[in-house]
Length: 470
Image 1: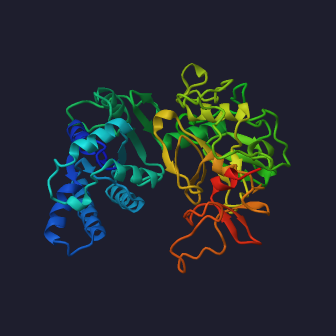
Image 2: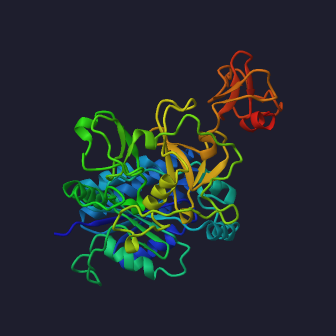
Image 3: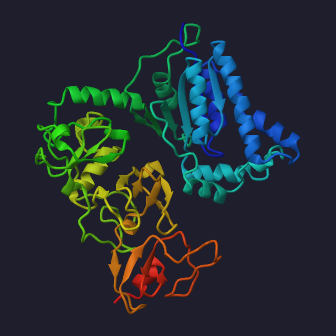
């Protein structure tokens, strides 16, 4: 007997989830369970006697119970919900495991211009039912995006990311039919042959981390199959290199492999960095930022066109993955972008022992421009996109320039040198409601990084330290 299928939508408000869910339910012979059909009546019936969080949790519990019941009856099910919290995903995965069902996540990510248009169209037209759960303005959406609302890893669960801005879903259906679990024998259409786990076509991106893992195992068995440019890269198209330090190289180093940066061999007695998803590895010296590498707050990234903000590299390098078309540099490949900037020597992949975040290393991430990767910088609270440093363990994001600011500056605003600090040791939110910059005397956010003189308890905004710099 074939496994039942569980497809769950995922995405922020007004991303086209429900429209797509109804099409997918028909195309894949699924019973449709809509969270809003449960949540809104509970919200309206409670008459403000229940907190929104309680109503939300009750609604998800009822939805999961309905899904579990249908799966046990061998029905295919599609759940239309935001699935914004990791806890909701984990519980849904447990439902799938207990029912021996195959789970697929379909995440909707429209382009901003269309997303904003949909939000504006919905204003004033939606019913009052469950009004407190409806996001009404584009500013609210941007806030959720900045907080990375719903941004979490799904492990080995297959995920399909859809650009719902597409005028036609034909291309999506072609990819989906070859990537989702095959339909049963009673389906209206016969299953098509499976396609590779990574594809990019007309705004649709397929991610199957289980295939990545299988490919990595095959690559480990076939370690002697390498390109001239270094170790064979596996799954580079849709994954970022998560580099971990290997301090016992005598047991870990593949003696036939070389550094993916300088292409020289890695000595058997030297520590090195290695990606935990593929064979990408670097000398410690090639990976880490030199002590004298510094950038200014307003400095433009050297590989971004100042007018179009597109990537502009003096030379381009292929990542070594067979997934890249024609086996050459592709701007749609994360591996090619990462390797090209590395070979060009622009930014260090790893910043260890940062004074404002010494506990874990900060890792460089480069996204494709079309990914619309938006984040809030932990250092300055300003927006950013595409290129940043991240601590995976703490889930914090940082602008490149904020990460590589000078550790010590001499500024005209203070007689002593100022050092980069995560916060002032004397800032006490329990005692004070407001905090001020000692240079410009304007209010400052106590959560933001500062330049600070410990001896004088003198704190400034990051930009103020440079405004008054000699």
